Image 1: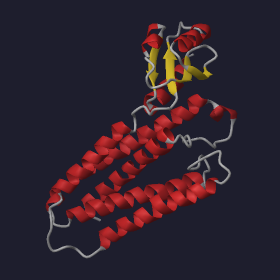
Image 2: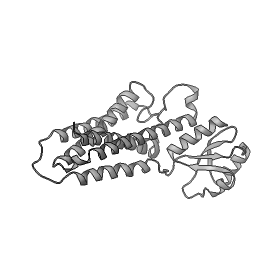
Image 3: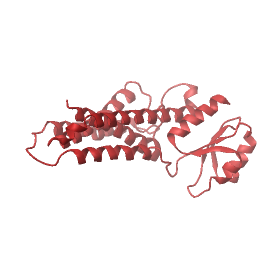
Image 4: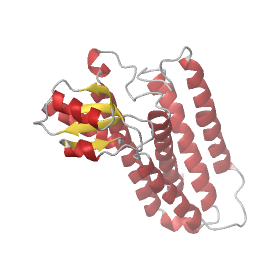
Amino acid sequence: MKGITRASFVIGLALSGFFDGILLHQVLQWHHFLSLVPGAAFRDLRVQVYADGLFHVAVYLIALLGLFGLWRSRSQLRGLDATRHLLGGSLLGFGVWNIVDVGFFHWILGIHRIRVNVPSPMAYDVAWILVFGVAVAALGWWVLNRQRPQGGPRGRTAGATLALLLVAAAPVANIPQQGGSTLVVFRPDIGPAAAVNAIVAAGGAILMIDPEGGFAVVSLAPEVSRLPLYQAGALLVTRSPVLAGCLAFARGKAA
């Protein structure tokens, strides 16, 4: 396997991970990474959001690995068949991610499903693995193994496009989504009563709150200003899955 094929395969894995996190964790909010893990500790929203944050961190690392591999193989981008290797490898990686995700994490480990709390979660799993897993992987395999072209554009443009797509996907995975829950982390000296008063004064609805007032998960309309929360002692107001997960868990441990 050529270096650019390996690099594009890893980039495809990362793109699929970002696609999973953006669509299923943030936009549709169909599951958390550890939604179905048994035990009282995993019913704590801090733990669930923290796991989502670690998931995004892992995808960031995979993305960096793919970009590094693409940079190391940059000399191969001059080949006439470079575009085929880049496209085929990335499609194969995208599909393999979803096959492994559904097959291993959903059906073997059982830590989450494509959509939890529905009568037929298996139907969503099967549809997802067929459309975004098997079909995309098969398309990538076909592209990689079709007859080598005798001419065509060189791969530098295709490589730059693939890299830019990945670089663009990374921050999108961390953009707050409208309608999503918002994490508010308060100063250690802010008690639960003051935290509740601050949230209500800001026009937010409390979804859950730390008994000691260290943090709260609230519903805030997009047009609502976050300034009153900061004025009342909030250290952070965010919907970022990485920041929210890591800081909520850290703040909860310190409380």
